Length: 208
Image (cartoon, rainbow, N blue to C red):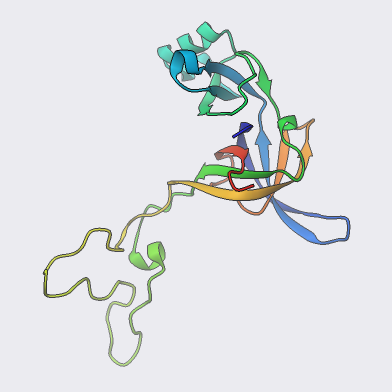
């Protein structure tokens, strides 16, 4: 990994290319992110940069967090994320902006999906519905047989009802279509995980 940044999902829209084709894009407000900590092989065993994103008031932080920012001498930030980078030339106090990326770059975007609460197996796993006619019922939206007589138990990882969504998901190999340096915006082709105003982590693609 050579470059990374933290951003906030603004929403989706569409733009047109040179020949008039419609491109669905997700708009992300990316950075500027301050380098809050730098880790090295000599001291920590690996190279990494800890980035901070989005201004926050002191009253919304814990005492350890306040001390962490004070020690680094950087503005207090709401979100912190560590990235292991091949090039850790940036120093504490430097800012990472959208200019780090360029139109045409392939990136991986990580975010938290929308939480849907406790849902049934039909919605959660897209299972088939039970028969709706010929006297089958009265329940239709539930899974069928759970198992067999032997070993007379339910195997682990059986697709059943439960918590759906609110999990970390990474979408790989997305293309950056456009960059607006003045407004710190990235236009990325396709959809990315999460709801509007959700925090996402953008890094160059491992498959590019």
